[in-house]
Length: 306
Ligand code: PMP
Image (cartoon, rainbow, N blue to C red; front, side, top):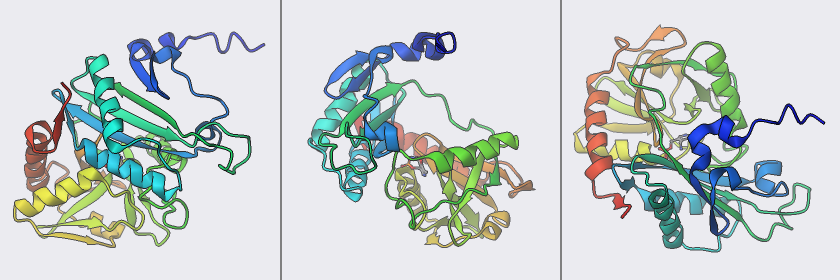
């Protein structure tokens, strides 16, 4: 029954990705043999958290910061992790080593674990853990991105607090789909007050009269790249303001750019059909991109894989 529909193997669907070794609950498996239970509440209810981390030229950027955020996400959803940041860090490094990956994206996933059906996590006694790493091409590319404003609301803090990097990305998925259907690259999501929250996977910055502005964190993930970029800007003598921001702020900005571990620093050349600045990469984004590239490769926050 329906077997023809499901006949394609993971190898056919994913190609070489399916052959990478993945860590699942204590052991390494080849990707197409790595499985989590259908009773896991991570799958049943999106009850879980994750992190996205980057490795550049054999070094992991801000490993501890990412794992600290993961532990904070866990605490925020009342989940106790039965291992330390250090132990988890070793698993991340081992995953990269086993797959001989030097430039990669690493995904650490913690699920609520196996439990009886029903929203209550009370019967889930052991959180599930998956660590996977894979080669990673640039997410939005080199060209300035074209964005639209999504009608899908970033619900934090009334729903899941924005500090929780949860397995529940359906709002973001729908916003991204809206962008794709409109022929755009990504979407800006607004909070319940109509102020800028973030995009579907990155924080937002605007350069206005020489200083840098970014929405505060009521409805935006405390991005590790966001923090890094704020520090870099201050070092370059640029004033940074974290505040409530509107679409109007972006429309009149000289430059708008997005930040994220996967996104890095990506310029927004167009928002809602309006050109931002001259639509090209501006001087502030350009200077920050240069120092960011240096920092992720040889800065003080790099943990060598070997
Ligand atoms: N916002 C959202 C919704 C994200 O998924 C991400 C990517 N993790 C970010 C912002 C950027 O965060 P970071 O710089 O820590 O990757």
